[in-house]
Amino acid sequence: MDGAREDRTLVARLREGDVTAFEDLYRRHSGKLFNVAFRMTGSAADAEDVLQDVFLQVHGRLDSYRGEAALGTWLYRMMVNACLDHLRSRQHRQQAATDFLADVEGFDPPAHPSWQPDRALDRMDLEAAINQLPPSYRVAFVLHDVEGHEHHEVAEMLGIATGSSKSLLHKARLRLRAILRGAPDTQGER
Image (tube, rainbow, N blue to C red; front, side, top):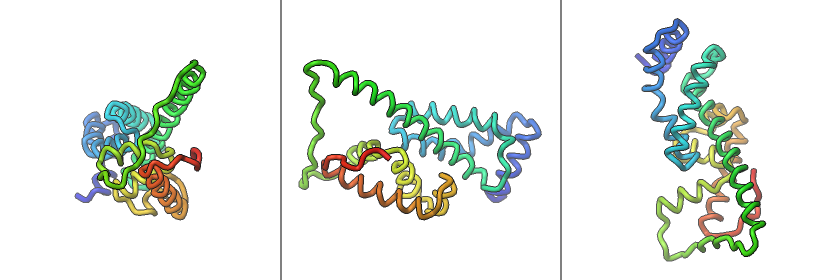
C-alpha cells in the first residue's frame, strides 16, 4: 500500500475510534516529526515536549483535517507551528533573563568567539549557528536544507508562497555565514 493510501486508511480508522490507529499514526510519523523538532529547538528534551504536544493536538483536531493536503504535510505544519511557538516563548524568557542580568551591576556578558579561517567548521558550530537563527529563517533552513523538502513543499507546510520560502532560505544562509564568521548581527530578529 502506498503512503498516501495508508494515511487515508489511518485517518478513517482514527475517525471510527480505532484505538490502535493512533499508535500506528505515532509509529509512522513520530520519527520524522521528532527530527524536525530537534533541529528547530536544538534540544532533545524540548523536541520530545513539542512532539508530545503536537500529538495531543492531533488527537483533538483530527476532525479539522480535511484531506486537502497529505497527512504528513498536515502533521509537519502542526509541528512547525508548535516549534515556532516554543521558540518564541523561549526567546521571550531568554530576553527577560538577559534584561535582568543587564541590570545587575558589574555583569559582563561573555564575548562570542571569533571565526578563525584555519579552524575547521564542525557540526557543533553549525548546530549552534542554526540555533541562533530567527525562528522563521530556522524553519525554512531546516525544512529545505536539512530535511530535503522542495520549496513548494516548505511553502505548503508553512502556509506561505513559494517565493517566500526561497527568500527565507536565502536570508537564513546569509545569516548563517555571518554567524559562522563571527560578524555582529545587524539584521535584527525576523
